[in-house]
Image (cartoon, rainbow over all chains, first blue to last red; front, side):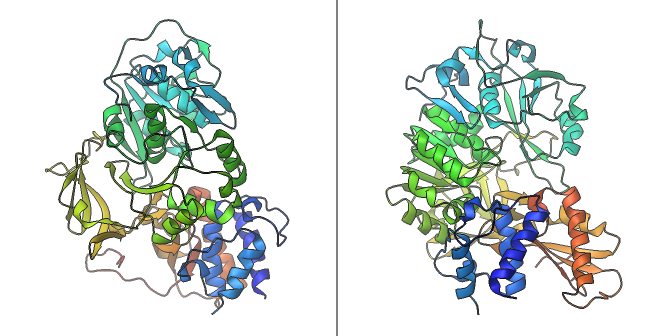
Length: 81
Length: 462
């Protein structure tokens, strides 16, 4: 499964568990408006670390702060080991 | 920063000349209106001298109620927004609560039914005579090992001790905070705003980061505070950070790492950036204003602004006039020398101390404490589980997040990542979600063949 599909699948999973409703997941969707709160994102990053084997945010020396869903996916694609 | 000089909060806001307000999505209330008015519809007098549970759902009602209740009631027990209703009977009984302050949104908990009930709403009516003055205890809730919250007693002096020392946090016109004012960190900002004569922009659950920033920008926020997790979320999720230009940015409630400090420096190049160390029990111990993670080594062993810090058995100990008066249940809060054991482990590197986790494995999820034992107790009730170990995993959003290692009864019969194994994990997680607040539910479960148990019979938590 592609990284992007894995991310989307996990976002849907976390949203379902936390009783949140996701906005349509397009590349230019601002993460702020996607429907997950900070705890939702925290869980998402932990799940993706299990699925993809990386946490590109903690692995990076510099702070990375993606703004859109497309940026978020890119961080994972570039952070791939 | 204005000192109290034995004034009540109502007298403090009455003396503020600048036009200041509490601002929330539900509306704004001007200090001048509240100074001579009431949000209790003429029923404040019924609460005089009583122990009162503040159970209003909205922050704006809570903000108004705190001004009015202070110096009128004997004790204010401040219910945090995520309090588990199952704990209400224990809270009410232990704190001797006689009356409850609600707003229109307070749920009809059975435990509240027997109490005198007074409604507070953000609609101010004129009020005639002032009440007789009482010394008021402020009781804050913090999480305990068993899940039942611990109740920590403060008063206005202990809560405002840290506000007396000169700080870059002074001189605010408009404060904003991502915190809820019913927790220690948020209450500090509330009191900084009121005593410093600043407006306060309250957060609101369910409001998007973008909408919150739009309100902060519209109010002209000059000072803004949050946990490192809340700041990471704001930086990660809101291009709107460019809408505001605060003069002072504050982090507290969790350990601020260099990445978040640098990111804030880049986002707000003209702001002073400070990170503070505080806990509900110990109060605010110190601020660090040099933009560097950790704190200077000379903070230890000296008394600064009345606060003494030392290290004993590897953890930070604090003695200060800001330390709480005690726990409601009478359990000791300080040692014989008057120091609070924070449980935070310190490591020295050169001329700086850094925080290196917590003794007892307490996990800090975005500023909220999680005791592993409480989560393990829930997981262990699942019929397929033999034992479990709950620990924190580093997380770029909330600092840490809860994960669990679980030993099943019998062998794990499922192949790794098989649908059956995933279904069992989901079932255990659902079990957790049904009983625990969201931040305590593990983000991930791993099935492990065994866990280390020490000679004492206790789980080895490394």
